[in-house]
Amino acid sequence: MEGAVAVSFDARIRRSLGRCAPEQGRITLHPALRGAPRARLAEVLCHEAAHVAAFVLYGPLAKPHGPEWAQLVTRAGFSPTTRATALAPPVAKAVSSKRSRVQYEHRCSVCQAVRWALRPVPQWRCAECVDAGLSGEMVIERRSRAPGSA
Image (tube, rainbow, N blue to C red; front, side, top):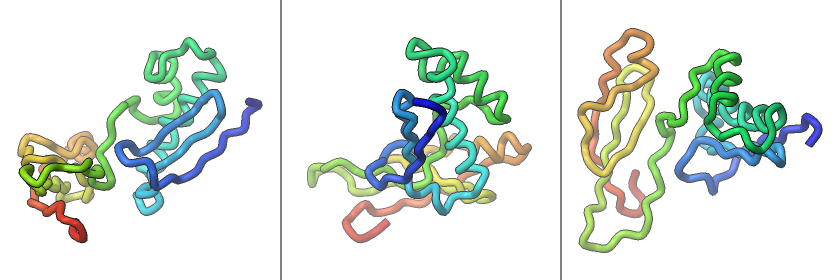
């Protein structure tokens, strides 16, 4: 790979915001990032590009979220985090009819970031808003997982 990096969106990504194949110089992003704030897209793209850069600079022995990767993300002006607030609900696996078909949407009242869970988690806070000095409190709503509803 000589400096070329291919970036694409793929609807098959379900549980992460991005995926990287550093040895191939390929970055694949969750399609929800198309409509996300530019700052979120830049953060995820930087995270994935740092994987490619770490591979090019330090070789295949560099750990995916190791110190080399973290230094590259920091130098780019972002926090080297490995988990981001999801932009879309996770895709539910096949569930038995005995299990609940309910998920809980946790939405930041300020920036509208969303996290999903199978139960309400009142202690969750929006990390970006907390970092900005706000409460980061999330509004919890029960949502049906039945087909055709969100």
